[in-house]
Image (cartoon, rainbow, N blue to C red; front, side, top):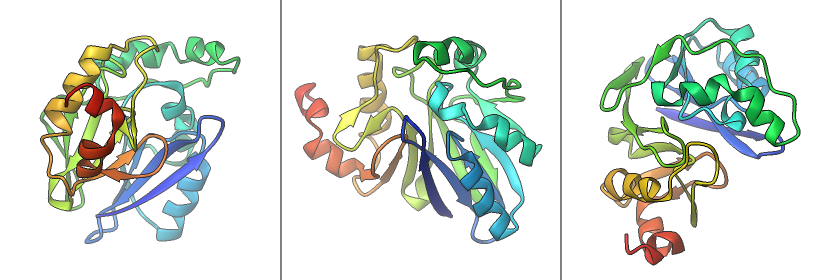
Length: 212
């Protein structure tokens, strides 16, 4: 599996394109402001898009979805507990003084513990609420890679002051689903640089202060 990150916009959100290196099939994860750049990269590879996968439904992670849907009719996946957030994207935008995008709803639902396969690459879907009710991470265990959305960052953790956030639940998700991964698992975050489980276990002040 090959991964490329794309970062643009006021929120500096990281979206990702994942390719199965054996078949060339691709998936798009969290299309934010860099959606056009994602399309350019996919077209350059002449790849077939299998799906659009949303770790959660905050504005910065879905604002480019309309652009993506003009490019591909591949289905969009979202955990049902974040559907109300998705439907209120206009209200979210207003909170930041922005105009909300007009987006068609996701066609498919994620469920905890299921696997998603594209080409011969496999992602495990893990429900990790705390930053939002339906937040998920996507774990490619064989590749030692996890796309963690806004659950955890290099040296920080996700906000819990947005609608649907909960501080205790966030740390429970990190304890149960990040710190149980091998230390050399690479964490691809929704903002900022990538990191590893081991680095965050030993250096992240939020985890140390919460005795995780």
